[in-house]
Length: 138
Figure: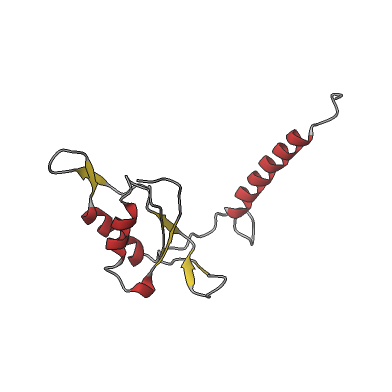
């Protein structure tokens, strides 16, 4: 390859980096004059319609992979701090988050149960949940 040639891989990397930079600059500017940062909306959540049901799903989802834990009373390990999880879920729902994501193997295989306990304290129409199937066997 001569000095004037660029590999396909290097071309794609260069274009991706340039595109990301332009996108970042564009996203942070005011459309009218392209110089001032956009006003960031506060106190409101953005929702997208579910493609099949039309239900409004919060653009921001809450990942339940790292619930807070505390030492078990008998000292044998750790357990999920359910009161803390309840508070986090309550705060998220109060601020418009209605999409929660968990999986069987999150937080020592306890995330799904803790998330379910916290969510079931709220009306069912207030939240949506996604979980993953894994090949992990507890």
